[in-house]
Length: 547
Image (cartoon, rainbow, N blue to C red; front, side):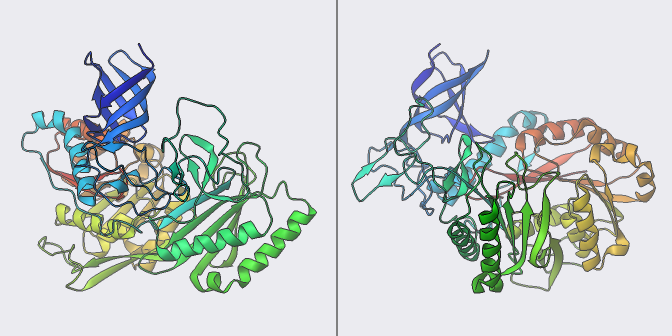
C-alpha cells in the first residue's frame, strides 16, 4: 500500500478532532493534524490496521468556504494554505510564528458549535438505537469566545525566530506549507536556535519552543503581565532551559487569574543546578528587579518560584521546591450564581439569568498547583445548567472526583442538598477543598477524604457510615471515564438509596461507554446537554442526569 494518499476528501470529524474519510476501496482513514469537513487533503500514512489506516495531513489542496468563514484574531495562528473550494482567495493568516493551538479560529463561532454538536450526536448514534427517546440538546455557548482562560503555562526554551509557519509579507513571499513538514526532515536554513524563546511547545516536537508575543485566549491584563515578565527575564542575561541538553535556567512561567476577583498568581519555574557565580549574581539582581517593578507589584497578588532541577519538562516533580517570592501563596476566585434559591423545591428559578435576582457568590482559594476550572464564566454556566437539570436535591451529596470542592460546595450554597461528602485522590486538593468549605461557611456540612474513587470504600470503609440518605451523586471523571469499580460502587449504592446521578464528561466516547454500563444496571437517561468549554478548540463538555 502506498505511503501517501492524494486528494482525499474529509467527510466529517470525530472526537479529538480526528478526521474521517474513505480510501477508494472503502477502507476507513483516521486523519490527524487539523482535519476539517469538506477539505481536500494530501496524506501520509503513519499506521496501517486491518480495518483502517491512520494518516497525517501533508498538504491541504482546498477548504470548504461554508466551513472556513471565521476571523483569525491571533498573530500566532497558522494553517496549511489551500484554496477554498470556490477557487477564490486563500485562507488569510496574519501569523508571525505558528504555535499550533486554537486551530478553530478560522471558523465562525456558529460553525464551531455546529461541528461540536455533530461530534456529540455521532458519538450517540449507536446508543440511540437502544434509547430512541434520548435527546441531545443544542449546545450551550461559552459566555466568551476569546480571552476566557484563567490559567496559562508558557515554557522557556530554544527554537525558532523565523521559518516554520511564517509569512514575509514585506517581501511578498510565503512558506509553501503552514503545517509541519511531516515528510522531509532535511535541515531548514530558516530554523535557528534562540536564547530568547518563551512560548508554547512546537506541535510534534516537544523539545522545541515557539516564541510567543501574545495569546488570544487569555485576558489583556494577563498578556501584559506575561510580556513584562518575559522582557525582564530575557534582559537578565540568564539562559533559557534547553529541553534537549538539560542546560539553562528559566523553565516555565504560569499565570493564573481570578476572572471575577481580578487577582493574579505567577509561578516562575527555574533550574539553578547549572548556575555559576555570575549566574547567581544575575539571579539575585533579577529578583530585585521583579520585586521593584511597579506594574508587577500593582497587578500580582501572589508570586512564587519553583526550583526544579529534574529532567522531566514539568513545572515541578517530587524533588522540586516552591517558595513564596512575595505576598501570599494563593489568590481567590469566586463563582456567581444569579437568583439562586436557598431552599429546595423550586426548580423554575432562572439560575442562568445573570441580569436579575439576588446573586449567590461562592469563593475559592486557588494555590499554585490546585485545580480550578480553566474557564471561570463557563464554569458558572456549566454548574448553573447542571443545577437546573438536577432540580430539587435532598439529603447527602456524594462527589466522587471532588477536586477542590468547586461543584459540591456550589450546590450546597445554593440550597441543593444538606451535606457533602467529597472524595479526591490528590491530597493537596482535599486541603484546598476543606479551606474552601470554611470560607463559604460550610465547614460543618462537608467531609472530604483523600482517596482514589475506585478504592474509596475498600481503603476507607468507614466512609459508608457518612452516606446517609444520598440524594445526589456527582461524577466529573478524568478523560478516560469511570473505572469499572466506580460503576460497581455506584450501582451498589443505588440498591440502598434512590438518588440522582449527575455526570459531567469531557469525552463523548467514554461517556457513551459509561452510559451503557449504567443503563445495564437499571439507570435511565433522557437528555444530554453539550456545553462549549473551550472556544477555538475541539474540546466539548457534556452534562447528563440519570435517575
